[in-house]
Image (cartoon, rainbow, N blue to C red; front, side, top):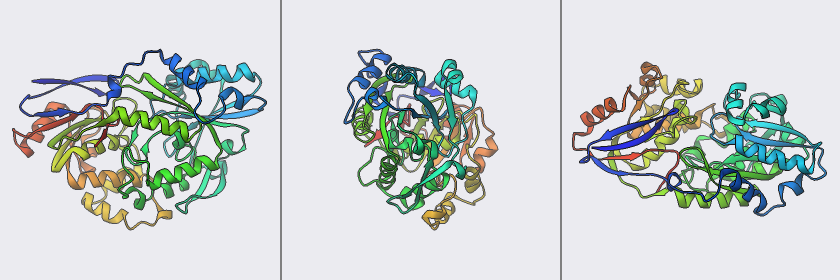
Length: 424
């Protein structure tokens, strides 16, 4: 019997799969990659060796104010390490500079004080000026012209009006933007809801280039790059983390060039060879990414790449926060089938994109081809079923259901962290 450890919320579960059924385990090498320096040393090394730009110290010299964009509660950016290092460097050169930390919530809910403390540490939360971006507050936005896609580019005016705009984040495979990090701090990070809608339109989501690990010809990425340039994002610090959320590499400098260097590193680490099977087990990497179904779609896309047509995806995700979005939920629950969702969404014009449309479009695409069993002991089973998925309280219960559908001899692929791999 094979015993495999997988993340579930803040726990580690050990699941068992019969040896005769296990076809393979797909893991990013980020999980076994050993950095030869401490997390702090890696961050400082990146800041000392900027890619394609002046150093952070040179950029802050003589400035009166600046904005640091940071990720929200749904992203495991280790800000407790990165922010103190950056702030120390900034104030050593310019002790009187006014610093505003802008939380890039994108289309998510605002990050709570408790979540901020958990992410940044109590000292920073109590001493620094921190603002949650709220994408639906039009009065907080500034118009910067049209995106390549034709949508209006509006971003948080704090970022536009500041003398220096920088961002921190992390780079991992992303299920339609190719990779996270870099330009995503601007779009969707601090963009208006309408701008996010246009960028995440059904036409772009349906593009074969809007997939994990792909930047070239990706229409969503093209819009994002343009937004970062128009916003004058002057500098980024992006890190790569392992399964324990520890920094294993850092990249700093020009928002495009440093990000591309980071993406190359992640691509080499995260690439795995496809093993096609009838049953695929995946997760969303544990907390904080597995708090809801909305985010868990990401982990499902890794399984989608490995699962045979009409196969079964077992998604292990706590989803203690429920579905994660009313529009996301309603557009699935209020339809007779995933196919109906897809037919409906592909008729929606770019500038009429609905909230969470991209997420329910991708989930509907997965559900139209595969049976999904969601393993959670924290979410209402009826809510899961309303979204056209099956529910299981435990992995063993889900595996039993999968075997009933595909037979006791069905082969299984396991992806312990579905958001960390790029399936070739």
